Length: 448
Image (cartoon, rainbow, N blue to C red; front, side, top):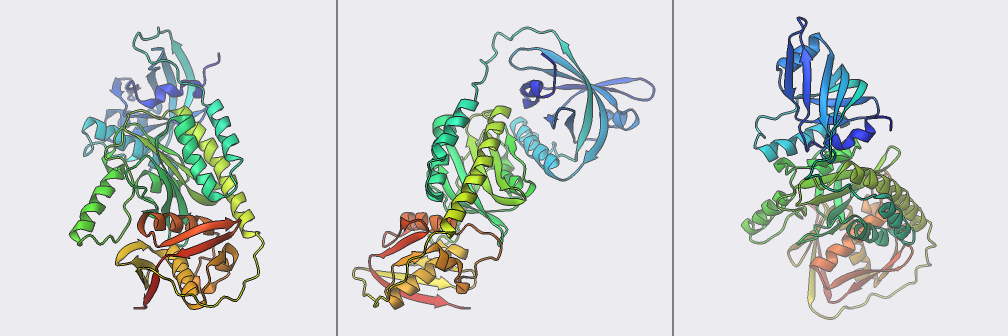
């Protein structure tokens, strides 16, 4: 079998440290361990630049070097003969290596020492095999993920709408890939943030929680449009910490929740975030994590990249089908009086946030949508609505850019299930839904 960098990808996981050999202009050699060797493509690798040490000084005057890699399963060793090309200090490659280095640093207790200054790119001139024997403690080969990917696509192909697609994706991750902790987030282009629409494996769903562009592994994956995978616990990338901070904040404010905490494991041994995109358009991010270190491999990353590519097409198709749905003729309905307990709803125009019985529910576009539905129900007795009429309602201040309205409705529907049993949104057809109110609405709007 011809040796290529792709056949050596197990060597780049960091299970066995790599070694680099360089020399200066006087041919004085230097050997050092590497924090990480990053696979780029069939001709290039990248090494982390953290210190201006002997290796770095040698490379700048003599760009040739040799790396020793070991396969953690077969114990075979390889020499990579490489030539320095350039250093980058921003962009997808740099951010991906920075995240992985953070995991390595946290794992080794060197977070304050390991700081990535740049990603050194090298061209691989030649690969040499050094004979080795399988390690007696080597783990068995990883299972082939292609059948799992094929079954997942078959299952998702029968989903009728976005809600089924989101739930089906989480089911496939759990059933087919044994990924029990996962989140799906959608991109809010106008607000430049991601919001959680579905999750699995956490004590609370976190539906409606927001992550800014560039925040943590999810925000970085979205900003750079690149999958990011971390194999060790990286403190600065933990979302479980945000859950605890939010909890303390809520109790300090007399149990009034002012934001929705992001779900996450208290200690995540492995994390992976994969952007969901179609061309230049960012749709969202798929995030998985595990308490087990080194849980996700290159094969897992390849499989989820393929899955998210399919998911991007499926989401776009679902959007188009929903927007093209036939809208029924609206019937004139007399206002109705709801019976039951009072449902106090306060809407703050400034950030479009909604509080129900003094309990924070949602804000932004989803908040504006709920307020419109409640006002129409209270003033005109309406309970049947369509996606199309919301899209064309200028009072909602929907963004001009492409925005998944159905995802907003799913978010709103799930938040109501979690926080308010008096209000229910139920789907009645493609692009149609009903609002059910069990109680007497008392609406108040705060403009300032």
